[in-house]
Length: 296
Picture 1: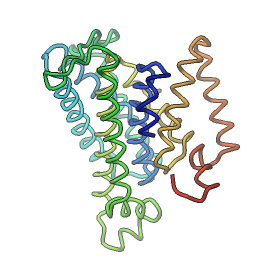
Picture 2 (picture 1 turned 120 degrees about the vertical axis):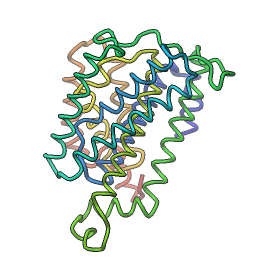
Picture 3 (picture 1 turned 90 degrees about the horizontal axis):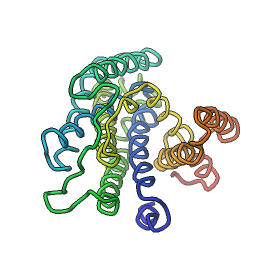
Picture 4 (picture 1 turned 120 degrees about the horizontal axis):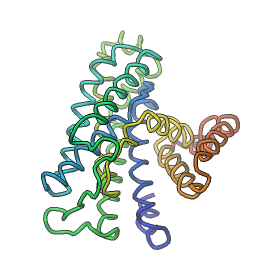
């Protein structure tokens, strides 16, 4: 995967590839929560969008360097995830999903009304600046390696979390929470930590995306974005490491190359999702992993 993204700019438009990597990291962060803890969040767009707004505002208005802007956006999402997790984590199933959706809608209306977000216009013409004050990111060639390093770093962190003792406890909670509780694990605390980690990594994706497109808009905090990341994860393969990356690549490719269909793109996405659910119950990567009998 690293080799593919390293050489792909020679053949594919770099801005498109950077969009794929940002959404792939977002989907991987979401999969950490739903695939390994079993918690379905309908409000993950609030972390993506709010990090984008803070990062864009910091870069444009405060004039900070890109790495500081990304860190500020990520920190904002981490704090938001801590609060949202604290309020939602004690509920289960549909109740948890509805609380996260309600919180995300509150963040959406805040983003619509807050002065610093620019309302429906968003924050436009965000300067990319110079990384560490040295490397100019104004061109796609300059920005691409930074996005690649951020994506691979986030992906490796998720891989490490999943394969750590902490990750094994998360899987135990997903499989049988009452039994994990009986073994002495504070399941709510573990779920809260996983929720914060997921929200923080989603914030990294949102902050990076704002600098790539030099724009922070309401699209990223809208409820439809939360639905889109669910689609990416299920399409690629729930609970697989590489599934969300493949799912994000498929969805972004469809949106990019079927843009001339207008609103019909969502219909095509729905059709593909139905076919995937009927024919590939485990998702694209999940089915491949099942055939070769190796975890992916």
